[in-house]
Length: 91
Image (cartoon, rainbow, N blue to C red):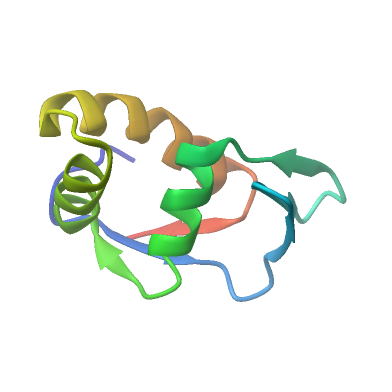
């Protein structure tokens, strides 16, 4: 599914995330783990409340001091991975 600024991002309610120091480890539906880097943690925490991609990009750009286009490009791949692993709903 192509992502645009209006795409609503919602954590899957069955997703399990455990903080471990500076990271979060997620358990997907296949029973496989995904360890998040600091940017991934920021994305995951921001999505505690569903929000559109555009709002997430603005928040992360401000938090990390990076241009919105750079954030959008980098985050889209990560969001697609989360969706493919059943951890995030796009719609």
